[in-house]
Length: 342
Figure 1 (cartoon, one colour):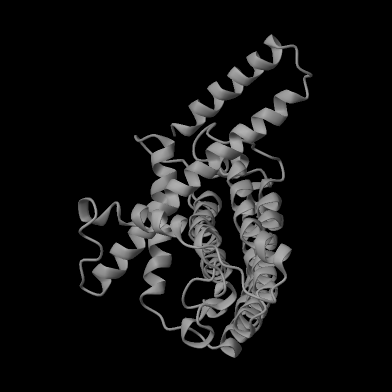
Figure 2: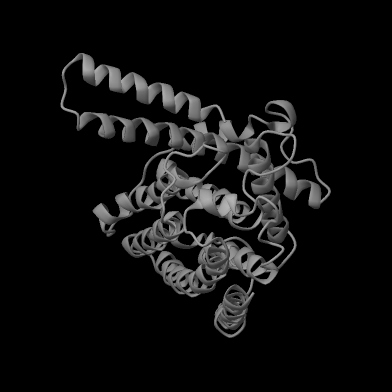
């Protein structure tokens, strides 16, 4: 990907600036972190614009409609126009809200997504930091999203927002358990939590061949983790108007929207890395294979949204604790026996 050569050149340029002006060496990693963060945030913003357009087109074709067509080629610039509209909207703050928490919640929702992209391997060497605890880092960072949703729902001072926040807390905590357990089988097979090592371990056979049950559990739990239909009860428009973010407007609302679509691609990229061989594939560049596999999972999540009805709260919790969790433990036990005995 073009972003990584740009990152390397900017980092080298910053090293030269620090050396030329005689600045303390501590300025080198600090400046590099700023550069990396800005470029990754820009990449995520462009990615989300494309995903929103893709969602509209996919949903339209499933329902035998055209979708956006007028602004740009096949409505390609419609999302940009919507983003400009959101930027110009008035930033309102409801009376009686907890103002500091209300204002920081949207940033708290988007920031963990930017941090998580640091360890995603888009290709051979196309990774900002290949941590030896990469999988643990990903799951630790992405769980911060539930705090942002609860904070936004509670601080809004609205019963609809509060109910959406409570629903989100129950849902995300419940589905986080089978999600992590589904990844443990992959870690046992690869013998490492480093994402680069997990991809290297799939040089001959993708782990989805050894872990089909874990892959299914991961996709279902990840759908719930990013609040996508049929697990979108924290945002249920028919019941809660818009859920935890009903009191937000303008760019604050847009940041929750950015985080939701960016997280959809993030969980798809993690699935491609853990189960589908990451960037590995014949003939074409690794970045092409990685993006192709990730967008295949994204399309699967979009098909879920426009195919299945929303679950009730009791059905959602029952499905997590009485169905997914036992299956995740069963898969983990079988994988452990295979690793030890075979």
